Length: 465
View 1 (cartoon, one colour):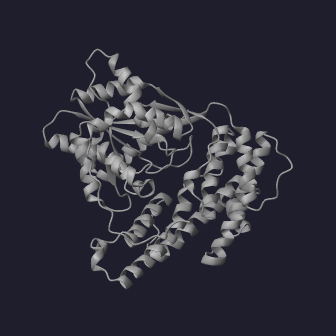
View 2: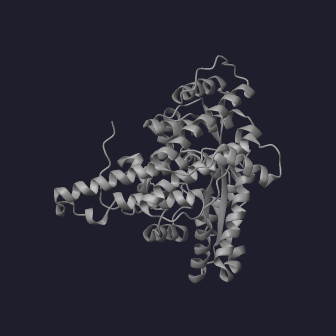
View 3: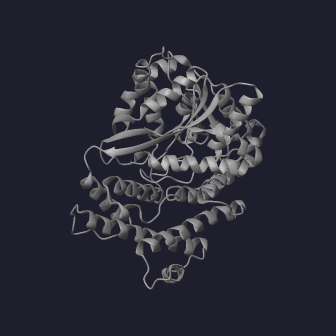
């Protein structure tokens, strides 16, 4: 049983504290860790010469480099580490110039990661040159540190523009504007310092492919999730795509029924009925028939809105922006209730006041639970598996459902099932030269940031295999 959440001192910024000795150990330890702790059996790089050129130019002082990588999985940072420590050095040695003694990248990470990753990650990330950022508020120390690394860091900077994992190998979430803003700040700072380097954003695609299609493992997990949701055992355990999709779709419908009733009955959310949604879709698309997948997607979006509303009403937050935007603001509101400035000196708090603070922290954590459910579904479309029923898309969707069901059961997400061994592929797109957009930035910053973000979104989408 997990310990109850307690009120704690505020989350301090974790400053980079790069330790070269740790980088020398990395190429030896990381491959063992990946093999023993993940499903990844092989990591490969496509168009690696693009990174070699950009990294070489960076080492020679010709550019400042920001790597924007896709974030479908929690294993992506491990793949990026393997890239710099194990794949890039041999490629650099093939070049005509003397390679740098160590290849590496600084990186930005969410301040919340050490909260679930524990004291080890809190110790490790700064010593690998990482800089923390709180995404739900204006984190001035975090932004200053990232801006300084972008301008003067010993190594390039890496960050995930999606902001969080979305669980989809072949679908990209809407990008956050921070990557483009970092690029423009760098151009601005370089020109103020009268330096000649250019500023590049290099798109990096990451995807995972099963070495052997794990259809039997998918059917086994599907049966387990059906049992968790009260669905009678299927007599047909065939591995045909059509039958598996039928069962997957039915599981999604049952989960929606359960969750809609939950939010209607206990949180008094006014969710539309299936009949109302079907009528709306028919009117919007001028059709006499309703696409079942579109209906499922519409139900899901309404459910996600209701789940976020529960938290927003408690924290008195006005709903605004996309679902990821709302999740970030809710997360920060919860953290503000849990990690509190007045608790820096816990000795100054008498027991009753500390007890009340703990009660508020517990309540905030319960409200954040609704937001955690939504996080797993922000990229779900309703058509992902139907339009291309590959084993990877089946697995993506089923594992997202496992996340949600496990949260609803109060289980541990760290025990996520492994369906089969995988090959990870990193693919490099052509860099975006931010300098080309700087005159636009000087005229209208918001539009220029939106434009570069759109270009990056297109390039990352183009890297999906």
